[in-house]
Image (tube, rainbow, N blue to C red; front, top):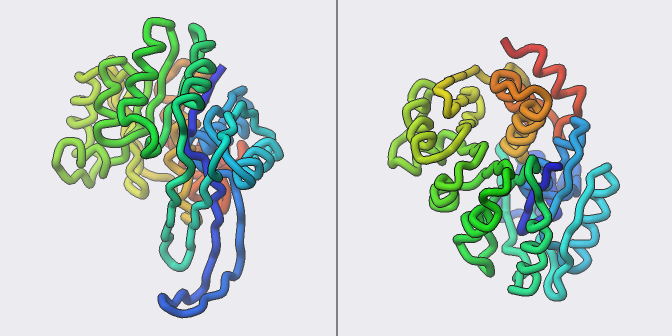
Amino acid sequence: MIYTVTFNPALDYAMRVENFEPGMTNRSSSEQILPGGKGLNVSTILTHLGIDNTALGFIAGFTGKEIERLFKESGCSSDFIELERGISRINVKLKAGEETEINAAGPEIDSAALEKLMAQLDTLKEGDVLVLAGSIPHSLPDSLYSDIMNRLSGRGIMFAVDATKDLLMNVLKYRPFLIKPNNHELGEIFGVKLKTRGEVVPYAKKLIEKGAVNVLVSMAGEGAVLVTESGETLDRPAPKGQVKNSVGAGDSMVAGFIAGWCESQNSLHAFKMGIASGSASAFSDELATKEEIEHVYSRID
């Protein structure tokens, strides 16, 4: 079974505004409310691809109930922990020429609620996959990802981590099966700017040397790079298409890679599934369907 963890789920309130003017009253031409959060996005794409999974995390208040309702309505499975205080956040995604995001802080997560999550994670067994994605709320310790992986190490669980900076570097000693920085995040770790797929490769290899099994680097319009612990290096340009929505594209890539690996245990197929899923979501107003992903996959050389 695949499990995803989203510590701070949200309602994503996406508004499209034509001719946006700062400081003025603007009216949207369309609105959309979707359950959001990196782990929830991964779970949604896995579900679209027919891969069984369960989303874990914390919800609170009326917004939390709506996140859960919308998530289940879309066919996804969850086992959220409901907090006693606060409300789950609403994130505003403004689409007005370029995309602007305003992300709220979210509710406080107390130690009792965190222990409930740990009890859920303690039930994972050999062969399960755990996806840890996104930032950690201010009410939780910065070491939480590495604490979880330390707690579950030695059980034969495959970890996938989509995080940045120290959150990512601190888990490498636990040999995560997959990490997915983008080129900017990878460059930030090493204090360099990485613009081309060729420039990415040596730095991805450094993360392999530090313990990662597979390093998947997303590069938006430039494509993607995969480096594996066996020394295999793959890169592909981005598929052609009209980008409609960048929100969730990186999460879709993580889900596609995991789905492809579960299907075949073949790194090339997993890599192409990752690219296809990420690109298909970028080409769609919502997270991509299976048919959209398959269509993009068929166009990858």
